[in-house]
Image (cartoon, rainbow, N blue to C red; front, side):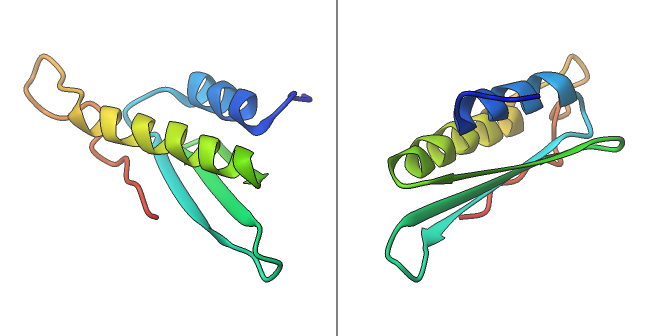
Amino acid sequence: MAFRNSIEAFLHAVKEGHGPDMQVVCRIGLGANGMKHCTVQVTGDSFGYSIEAYGDEAEELCEKASRYARASLLAVSSTGRANNSSSRMAL
């Protein structure tokens, strides 16, 4: 499947893998050439996506992934336990 940009790919991965076993990990840094680089991994028991972005899109992807990871950690199910307690964010 082809996506127009990394944000679209990330949203697809989250939609496809949504569930209690899903993890979102985001890493951003600078490459040897000074360009920003972001890698986001969306994983679960039976799937795994790795999405990369560069430059300004790297910042946008990392921001979206980070917000999603934080929101997932705060979601509380009816049992009072975190819905997605295994989600984590690494920067």
